[in-house]
Figure: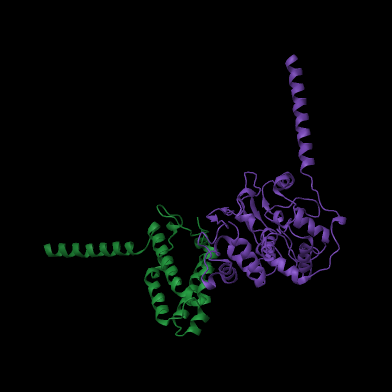
Length: 154
Length: 300
């Protein structure tokens, strides 16, 4: 009898913990804003490595390119969770996200997909010619989002 | 009884005051268009017209909903006073500018007047275009005339009390519209002066990059110091001391930013409508872009 109760209790606890786990995993509010800003920071850091090579200020370095692209990944892995409805306006943090993200979800998704595609294609390059050919599309994809879905700086 | 007479007199005085007030308003807000003799004879230069069409950014507001590269108008433009529907600039005689004379066009571009005498809403930046050389204005018309006509009837603006606002603009023009033509500064280089002309005249950069006074006229004491964004969120950045503030290293850096934007990692020209502006500027010749950059980087 006791063991039955304790089993039931344990199952219940596991279910509760799982539920809490799921709730915890989905980003909300300021948390989502902070997470996507960390992703953008990582993007900026990556660009800090790539842009000097594109401009010819630094020599092309395949290993450094790969490290920069790989380094961006973790901060942006939860992209799909970055944009809950309750993160339009920050409570304690500020956001430059425009309402268009939520009023034009198709356009926003397309802009995100363009970025993902350009990123993947750039990551597949192995030499300087490929890198220089594929970089502009990634830059343009950044712009595609910043033009329509990001407010000017405060 | 005496009270009755007093109030009748008072009413009469009030009516007189109102009528004379309306009269002053009507006279002071009247349009003052150019007349035919003001417009010089002109030989069209289509290449020059295209250049000024691009630096003027006409397409950014006058794009059609069907084709973003055709200035047939109609794409809604949200402003603080309501939604505007910029008109059709193609040469269609019924719905576009096909029937406009050179005089009509210059009056619109530099006096902010419709051929029927109505004041145009200054979301159309005639306040900057007023500084342009008439020849450049007329070349824009020639360029528009040469584009294929597109039938697209202009929609009524969605603005409260529009006729009253329009007439009131006649008053506003006394402070908001400066007819002084661009004057070259002989102490500066030719390219600097070219840049100053492109920025302050057709480029109308000051319309957003200079804050406004409480009368919504350009606050020239704070020229290019930036200000609130006209669409609300965020700010329009200052154009002063761009190198000292670490925005661009030098004029060359700014040229690359204008030409490439984020394709070369320049992410400061994308948001708030500047992405569109940058694309228009990128269509200019390298020497014109360099002239703009030289002038802008010299703003301290």
